Length: 411
DNA sequence: CGTCCACAGGAATGACGGGCGG
DNA sequence: CCGCCCGTCATTCCTGTGGACG
Image (cartoon, rainbow, N blue to C red; front, side, top):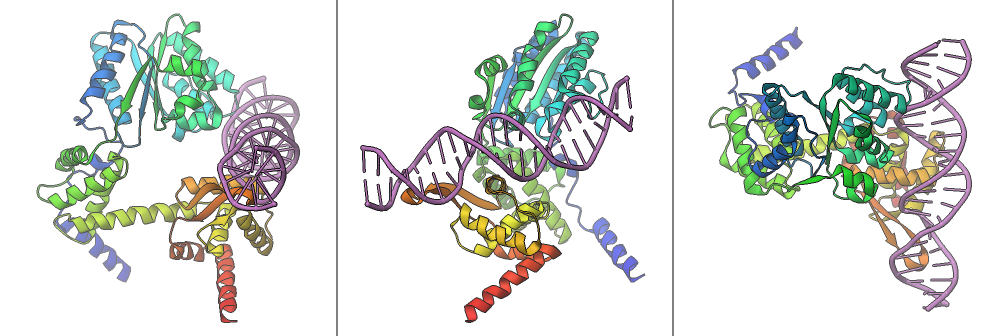
């Protein structure tokens, strides 16, 4: 019953407190606004490129580059959904299929998803990729649609699976007579050009579109637009807005990041019962986001990845090498009684941890003394203690390590 | 200026759990 | 139920390499 009282208070507080948010949804990154500031050129270009489908022609394949949070996805979806409704007016059979390759995961599932979109159901798994591709092709041919396939984050697909999917897709028109397919590929990675087979690449990028990062003043405008929709008047201070755009501009002009900051800052302010969002709330939000990110990442690591992190932690120096870490890791596995992975495998785990921002790994040559990776922690030691302290197996190792360190320093 | 360390990191292959169609 | 295929993780084997040392 005491608990009920507590909850009551929380809810009452929430309902009665000064309402900052008018519409939280507007700040989510899958929200597509009616106005996309500073992307007029891209909208015009993309629009012009896809326009031929209104006259039943196939449009050029397009390749879109740009860092995360530069509006690639938003612009594409914006243009294509407008295109679809325009097509209805002209009675053109136009449809677009949006697939996020990173979320979808595998080649198989990308084709499966495309298949669903042309009305051919496909089991989650069990069929060969060729079979799924064939079903997709037949379904498409039967529907007589002019299809625009949007492959978001194609780089994710290429990196693990190669370019087979893209190769098949670029050639699909040769076997279709009643339908047409155009491809819009979206990539965060500019180096993708080099990873792709040049034939595939050239047919894929009949047109190219580049999204530059936003600068601070552009981000400022974007946030201003969104904040008008998401917050009540006067609940956002000018200083907070500025710091949001400055922080995000420093981080490759990532608008998604800026919107996250703003949303979390709003939540922080709301929880504190404040009526306006201040600069301090934004700073708090920044810490909050980063902390959450790392804690989640650490928690979700596999046992062996955790052990790798712990090995680096326990070495406690700023330039441990692969070999040294492997030794400690070996020792830890022994204490746990777990089977151990090869050094080769450990190397890729380290690379993964590096790209997650948990470790920092850099290949260096020490001349006569070989070539290795210098590895150090990228996050605070206390954070690791906090997170792994609750993981009982790792926690035990951690405690052992700490006490043996203390014993050493005493003696 | 060649050698040679201590690995990097690619390619091929295997083990395994999950899920299909028949 | 079987045979097949999928995707993931891991191992094995391998060739490649920057630069201090001699």
